[in-house]
Image (cartoon, rainbow over all chains, first blue to last red; front, side):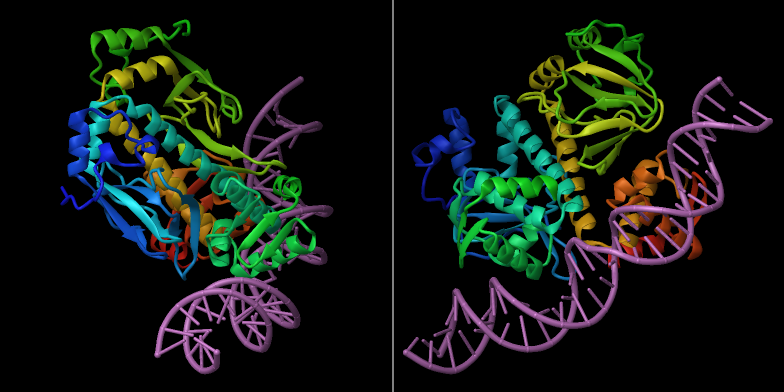
Amino acid sequence: MLNSNSKIKCGLCIHQHKCFFSNLSEEERDLLNKNKTEVFYKAGETIYKQGTSSNYLIFLLSGMAKVMIEGDHDKNLILRLGKPFQILDFPAIFDDNMLYRSSVTVMDSTACLIDIDVFKSIILSNKKYVPSLFSHLNQVQNHYSKRLINLIYKNMEARIADALLYLVNEIYYSRVFTLTISRKDLAELAGMSKESTSRILGQFKEQEILHIKGKEIEVLNKKQLEYLSKVG
Amino acid sequence: MLNSNSKIKCGLCIHQHKCFFSNLSEEERDLLNKNKTEVFYKAGETIYKQGTSSNYLIFLLSGMAKVMIEGDHDKNLILRLGKPFQILDFPAIFDDNMLYRSSVTVMDSTACLIDIDVFKSIILSNKKYVPSLFSHLNQVQNHYSKRLINLIYKNMEARIADALLYLVNEIYYSRVFTLTISRKDLAELAGMSKESTSRILGQFKEQEILHIKGKEIEVLNKKQLEYLSKVG
DNA sequence: CTAATAAATTGAGTTATCTCAATTTATTCC
DNA sequence: GGAATAAATTGAGATAACTCAATTTATTAG
């Protein structure tokens, strides 16, 4: 159980309507308020560290974090990007609370940390949360399955196309965006070296598939990205 | 709801003690009996087909099945091997019942098919199943995470070593085993071409890491496989 | 504002892995 | 049980992607 030093109680929280926990009973809301805390993370800070355990389930309130596996020789793979009001990642909450992936903020972020025992007691006492949790876990599993086959059998063009389409369709919801991750992160999202990433981006710029100015990216030809993803 | 043409009622089933559904109430057991069926699959038959939906949750009772993603140009990836009394794979049961992976038997198998609505009603009415289901989904997610980084950054030796260690530690539970999957399947488990798989196996034989005679494989030097997995 | 540091790009050479084709070995079926 | 078919192995050549090093560009700190 943790000391409550959060500024805002759930009942008064401005994020209430977007929160995973909606329509809680008075009692559950009190329990949650007593056992959650809001924390600020600077860009680049580690939230979860693979190989450790955590007693918290984390929801981002603002900012963005990468969910990644850390390999040897500084070779990491970004599995997905976590955004506000999503569950960031799951410790093994019904086993040993261990973490198999790390989470690192890619920009200044705030997060709501909920005590795992409290989380468990709420989802076990209130079956309305079971379907949405299942859905979430299932979606993550499907995302990882898709990533697997894409990363293993597709060429570099297709992998960068997939990474860009992921950013457009599932992260920024726009063809025009300011890249909030580094080129190295993009490389780790596409499972390749940063040098190759740079070259492919240059090539896409050349072919007028993208307009790039530093961190500002505009997808000029999304159809072509989808085509490359398909045939690559 | 499906016609019950299963031979054995859950209460009398010899697999009862190994089954996911243990200690069911009379009522629940009756419900399950009315809405499950046992089916026989020949080796190579498709149980689940990616891109379709299914109204069944499938438990193998005997045999073995590969859970795989089918890519283009006959390029597949085997994610894991399903064994008796495990949940084979999950359709999106709280969404549209869609499947994102295919399942194909690698030997003659029998399976217990349970109606998804019945499965849902049981897990929602009986919270004792929630933790084990969560655990299961979490383990699968962790397995996929690990597969991802291993397949993407490791060399061929390490990938075959990983595949062999998976077979030894999690499938056959023995250093000596009869390979129940083909060389092509082994290649799809290691995410590489069947020719390269063949070459690496030959090399391991040469180096006396393995003893191979057709489908009969003995791991002579497990430490070396673990070493190759680590450094590769 | 400039120096120092870090991030990103570009180039050239190397290598791991794939593809295609030719055999060999195993399996199926009449 | 032997012919036909499929699976597995082996070899040689092609290539995609990596690594290392050199610049260039961007960011941070004094």
